[in-house]
Length: 491
Image (tube, rainbow, N blue to C red; front, top):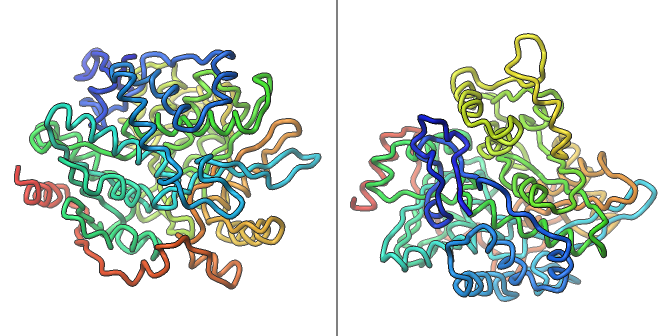
């Protein structure tokens, strides 16, 4: 299995296909593009039948071995077995099995269809990011030990990626983590979860701006190829291919748990900000998983919803980005969206390069086919199964109250966005699976507003906000960021 950049034009510095291990520790390709396989491995009906009997760790091995063909089978099997254990995913709700890793719960069945919740937040940081990040930590450690090397992870978070990465990488030999987050724009729980870590290999940097400013800093440093090489910079954001492909596994798991035969289809609704999570669903569908619809649920920062409705991709300025009660989706420049656009324009690297250059120069592009637009590919979106919807703070509160009242389940704000939008796209005979994003305790302020009481917390998280915090505050300045990294790596 080989990988190529979405911007691998004839003049690209990344036009030669790479192996999985070649791109594992990095993020952006040298030309600024994102890596994708030269072709998607296909899954047969016989494989799906056999996979119905597997544990989550066994399923992860079977899927990942199709993408990481240069990692010995025995090593990959050991890595997935060590990653996906009930001991790691121990925070299951009452009535759910930690051994299932991502258990399903049917919320409602009726004439409109079946609505299902897939729990993805039973890991150590109570967010779906753990599903990929725990594996990434073990993959990084394996690769670094093999080459006696080290890695400085430079990433950005709107809330959950940071803590998931730091918990996965803390204490890992040869790894340092430099994590950017928007200053005072995460929930109190999210902030405490990151900033309370005292491990010497963890560096938290609160950026005076929004998430998009943090993400721009990561891209700017990654695009300085000499600095990146000298300081051994890698990333755990979803621009990292290994991070996305690890998320493909739970789409297969959700499908197999919700169906009894391969002739059946399911749909997924995915709370979406950076397009990484739903991109994994797109990859699963391209592999042959019988997915009917992939529904992107946005909050008030509705860049993705606008594109899927109109064909116009219009990035908002920092001043136009809303600070909402589902803050992990407060994103107005979806990094992973380039991977889908590459597919939408027929894997045309030159065209992809031009469109995303226009994002930088003009703030977006238009594929609606209207006079003066950049193309008419929006008409083909349906072929890939994508639909979308939007949710507001009022919708969030109403959905949290409704789900708690009817089913006795307290969902977080992002999952509430998903449930609200999923109900607008349900179809009879096709189960709609909503991907849970986090446990409600991580966004307790809104839970109190909706229900008048605190969300339950798993053991060990009772007083996390009171722990001492260690972080620095910096402006969104690339030169100052590079100086900070240089100072703390000694390189």
